[in-house]
Amino acid sequence: MSRKQFLILLVALVVLAVAGAGVFFKDRSAWKRDDARLGEKLLPALKAAEVSEIVLRGERSEVHVVKSAAGWIVRERADFPADANAVSGLLLKLIDLKVVQTEPSGDAQRARLLLLEPKPPDAAAKAPDRTAKVLVPADGRGEGAKAEAGRADSAGTVLELKDGAGKVLGRLLLGKTLMKQSDQSGDSDIPSGRYVLVGDGAGSIVVVADPLKDADPGPAAWLDKDVIRADSVKSVKAVGPDGRQRWSLSRAKEGDLMTFVSSPDKVDPQKGQDTVSAFYGISLLDVVADPARAGTGLDKPLTVTAQSFDGVSYVLKIGAKAGDDRYYLAVSSAGQHAKTREPVKGESAEDKAKRDKEFEESLPKRAERRARDKTMEKWAYIVPRTAIAAVMRERTELFPDKKPEAKKP
Image (cartoon, rainbow, N blue to C red; front, side, top):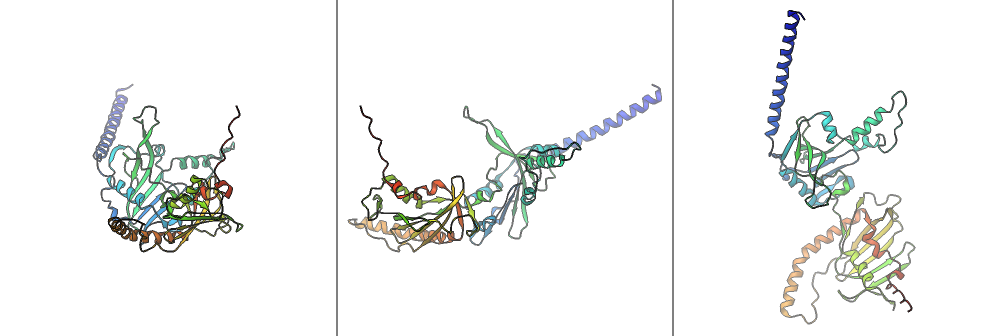
């Protein structure tokens, strides 16, 4: 090597060293800036009172939870009431979220941490089936389908918070959930945090110490699950789709066992109580926005009617199966709660005054409940079979179970 060549090589090495040092110190500076975020709030300017809409969007579903004059509603379920506790719980959690770790951002890193931007659900629905076998011809066609499937598998969940005018108050892209070993011996790993991109995703990836499992883009996850809740059921009867009465049960006062009306046949005590309990609280799985849609079976339902001691009637219309162990259901109610309390025979003046006061104090809540029960008539529901199984029985199935015959010695 000549002296001239040596000098050229030396100069080139010096240039490369200077450039490398520049990149190093630039990256180091960036990491210092990122490290400065540790302990800071993820959305420092967020105020729960300013939020009027929560948008969650994944590859397969999307939900808009919107604040209305009547409260929070789920737009994708024909404005059915949302679970207000779930809404407030998520907002308070987002306000308190802090950065606990930062990660460098890059395309490969984002894909690995499930932080790619999801496509709108309607576009994702047109994407290739990720469960189908992809046949790749010799010319290489089919790679696009595989790439699209891989991209969808790496997509995160967008969470947007908006004010009443539609202005975005905060935006997050939620990625992979972090897991940690449970403190309990033998238990599997438990969720402990989540990778997140803030805003437009131009910054570094951050980690928060909450898995944000409640940030579900499925509309059903945000519904108020309470369908109907009766008080003090006096009688229950069931009429089949053919108009034939299956059975009718009643009792004289609360606490009594249910018996068949106008029949000496015996009712199993627990099965009789189960018919009453069915009206004390039914939780939905999902809402059917259009109750008249074909296939629900609600045009020829099993109709179960309960009458309460204070003058309100409740009707369950049970339709066709909506899948494994679930059914379509419609509800209605009529009447108003009694405005005065019937005195209990033999109660003292002190007890009467106490019970009258408690009854008076319960009236506003009862009226609110009646108003909500009436609004529930606008939709149809999908409910688990376990919620209505007790009132779907045939008459003979309400009889006491036969005891097994004793074995002969």
